[in-house]
Image 1: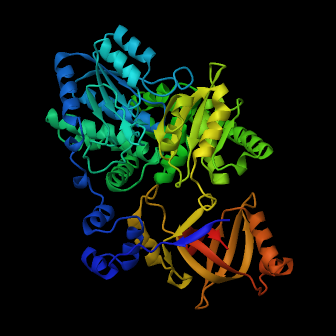
Image 2 (image 1 turned 120 degrees about the vertical axis):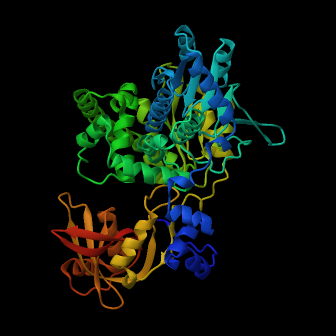
Image 3 (image 1 turned 180 degrees about the horizontal axis):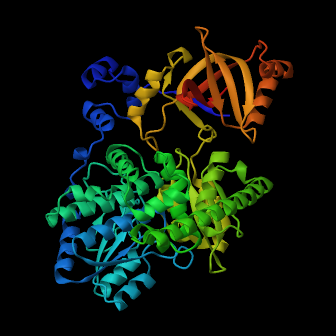
Length: 589
């Protein structure tokens, strides 16, 4: 079960509604997302490019831009070191295209997920030196690469870090955090404690984009040209699940416009291969269809394939790459399902679901999908979850963690850093490795030190507004579109309604996985409610409360005693030219 909470952020609804020229309902929803002043509301409702922040406000931006300009003017060789996920892919493309536009001699490398692991490493540094590289630029990584950066500097190379991950730290005896920065020439990361940049939650691609903006300014290139990169930056922003507020909202809104009219041969091929051609590309398309295909190359093959897809001018090659990525993602899905089932079996056999922090080791799982499976386990049990699998070194294990909002995974794992051989991440996710012999100590340490309570481990549903179903209208659905695109930090609004009689129920879908309820409003209207959750559990809960006879009457359309409280989102169903109002039911009781 979950706990339901009605958000009630204090705000002057009348004043803001009048000044901002938006409805009180929208004011309430925005206030629930922490957007309460008129400037922030205007930026949210009208996310235009002129509201992007000055990139030079970012710490070390001036130094980094001057280093790149100097290298370009001297004809020096520049190498970008990226990451193998969608955000890394987008960051590489952004820097690569930006520096090439400034006539820089630049190439890129991506660590191999299995052979190298995450981020800049000694092999990459030494190869760069052998290849005559003068300047290394990291993107979506580097902030924790203390030793590799030190090595690069000792070998005479210049190093610029562009990253968005949390800065590592060690605690002194008094519990004070001492933050650790690599010894690079420029460390560009809005999460630096000494960085005054007004928005801290950019993706790796977002930081790369700000760098290119400053670079274009330095080379007197029209800033409009930087906006052409937003189709890639938007993909990285959505797929890295950063909050879609402030600059991220502008990036994604503008990026989606460009994606839906893209001239990029590779992106068009991927849209075609995934069956999205002719359809509106939105945040769901990026996060759950296109992005996973890009990620699949780094998980199961070479991440370079995804970068080359977006760089190629050869339509046949683009189609080949796109089809390969689609096939890899289908294989990734099969592996994920199998791995998830194995992990759940182990958790329930060993009772790990009774622990507050789930730490499991399942050697059969491919390390590239450990994070995906950890996320699914976290959702199932609502507990922070770390899934470890076998490393190429038989004495070491490695994996990924996914967290819940009540648990800062980065801080908590940092307290057990002495048991690890490598570690990085942020409050909601982490990657790590350790000696197999430390597994039990690690599990016990995390569970022993946690302050999570039983109440923390109950999923929470936050309702924006109590809104009776009679208020659902076409105008309301249209008004809510002003809040798009939805994502982390800006979820779809959730409304609550109590004591709704159910006139009839139908099970739909070729797999019988959709429940349609005819809901009766207080004024006597009937409105469709669609539920995509566990129908068997729904039936069991209702029969336990009302009895099987009432459940049977509900399905037959005979008056029954069944009433529901629901958490819903209003929407419009369009079929054969007809439009009907409906509500999507997310939760019920």
